[in-house]
Image 1 (tube, rainbow, N blue to C red):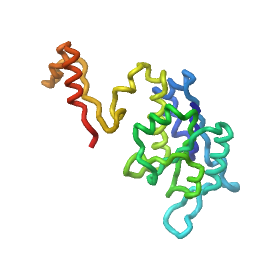
Image 2 (tube, one colour):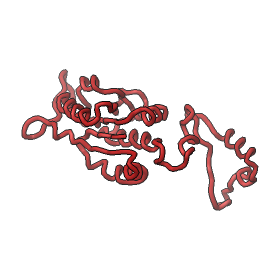
Image 3 (spheres, rainbow, N blue to C red):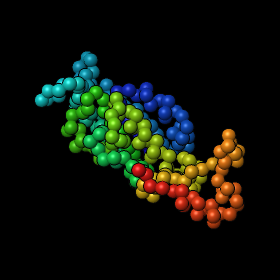
Image 4 (spheres, one colour):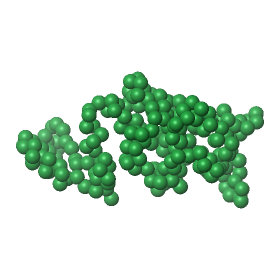
Length: 216
């Protein structure tokens, strides 16, 4: 899978892409990351990418032309890539979206909005609009990182274990995975549930099933 990110702050991604499972996935040849600086598509000597909104209002909006040309360049590299726009106006992002994109998408293009938002016309070239929750962050970079991480970890060979992604929270709707424990058996008066020490796999599975709950 090839993931291209359109952003005004490409340096924000270097630590994320160069660490943990994302780095492992790239080293294994399962993923390729490309950072596209939106400023390269800006207008004039100042490489302007933003302007005031029609109708008035505080702040600036990303202009449609630089965004379109950045997407156009990314599409030339990967014509079948799906374009994702993190935005409060989008559908709430969930595990089923990560599963779908990990299974079906061969490439992704993520647009990172900034300032007060973007010219709405760019959505004509967007396949998915996602919101990561009912709150606002400074730009689209952090939401893009979350979306990317949630997809890449699902690619076969990234996590290692065959069932690593099968038994975890949100894989079956809104269920939250059962609590887990490791050594020592007792810590500051807090004990591991006896059933987990019993060696009885049937009782362990029954306990885990009862402990699995639905998200609020």
